Image (cartoon, rainbow, N blue to C red; front, side, top):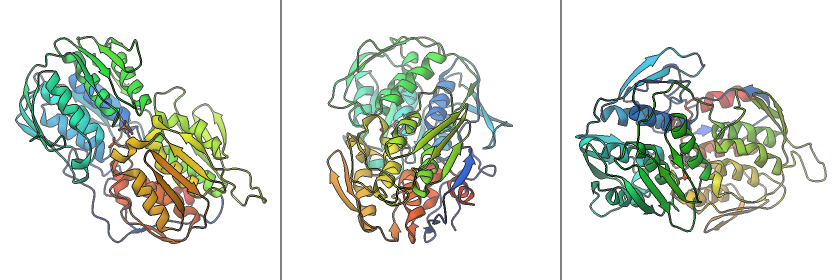
Amino acid sequence: MQISRYSAPEFDPYGDDRPEEGDGGWAAPVATGPVDAALAVPGSKSLTNRELVLAALADGPSLLRAPLHSRDTALMIEGLRALGTGFERVPGSGGFGEDLRVLPAEELTGSTTVDTGLAGTVMRFLPPVAALGLGPTTFDGDEGARRRPMATMIRALRQLGVDVDDDRRGTLPFTVHGTGTVAGGEIEIDASESSQFVSGLLLSAPRFEAGLTLVHRGDELPSEPHIEMTIATLRSRGVHVESEAHGHWHVAPGPIRALDVDIEPDLSNAAPFLCAALVTGGAVTITGWPASTTQVGDRLLELLPLFGARIERDGGRVTVHGAEPDPSRGTPGIRGVDLALPEGGELVPNLVALAALADEPSRITGIGHIRHHETDRIAALAAELTGLGAHVRELEDGLEIEPAPLHGGPWRAYADHRMATTGAIVGLAVPGVVVDDIATTAKTLPQFPELWEAMLR
Ligand SMILES: O=C(O)C1=C[C@@H](OP(=O)(O)O)[C@@H](O)[C@H](O)C1
Ligand SMILES: C=C(OP(=O)(O)O)C(=O)O
């Protein structure tokens, strides 16, 4: 079996580690009965990478407790370090690696390169930071990263008075010519392709001379909970942020306060484990579930019951129980859903695994933007499920799935952590599913293979 090199505690967020190529595939374990497991998951990618950026721009050192250590967060650390930020490792109290002290640069520097990997948060959050640095910063990333939209960010920076050289491609690679200051002011963007354009601009905005008034004009505004998360993290550091109308934000110029923060567990990364309860008719408990959160993964507690799950909550322990076996519908009796889910694109791949194993048809729409994630997730899900015998119809902005008996076969991950975990979920119920690159889960959850096998023991 292939185990990722990113496993804590050996994982070194400061080294040159990159995921390894697949070694011939990971045979997804089949559940031999209902799962019955309790586990904790490591810190949130979205919170860790926001707090890293804000800590680097803050007016003093900040401590991040229980941050995520994964490829995406290592890339963020390396990018910020290239721009002059200091990092110290501090013994952590959590089970998934060390805490991090972030030491902001006296002056952000440029004349460097930033490797974004395939991390949307790195490629959309760091260009405005680089604009505050002195000197040119060239951004590039994985082959798949060069296909992800960047034109909205490049145009926004130009509107803010920043010189960006992209050879008119509108994608990586490009160079941000930082002068040490950004004028700021009022701009309009179309964030239909990704909420990360909004988040990236808002995170650096307190450091712009005039702050930022940002107006979204476009057909869609996906992943709104992630924008709420950005606003909440800014406010917790004393930044004045207003949103008086939908798609309008104003960030006042001013200091970003240094702050010691606890990073919540990644609730979107809890999803595959919770789905396992439904697929096997068992029960899975996640510990440390926050009482209140801006994470979109919290919506799993409303979404999974639509598939037939029962949720039990006891303080920070959240347990998902599979549907009661129903002989007239077959065990484990997963229900079909008809959902519009523009706010929860990152949850979709795992939920589609449930839909493919359900006894009834499903339709999930409003998710055209996930064609711009790590891969075109609509096309990838349709291709991989069809390869296993599923009846899937690809819509422009979603998927329709009809119940059909599935068989084993290869499952391509497309360098997408959530495609990899989706293959694992299907493989619980379908013998012979082989995920080509389970190590790609190191993007946000290096411990996935170990946690998955432990859940099944
Ligand atoms: O800001 C963030 O941390 C994220 C925003 C969302 O991006 P999109 O708006 O591109 O979907 C989400 O899907 C991604 O996993 C993380
Ligand atoms: C879309 C995702 O990632 P990224 O931050 O690279 O956009 C995701 O994690 O599902």
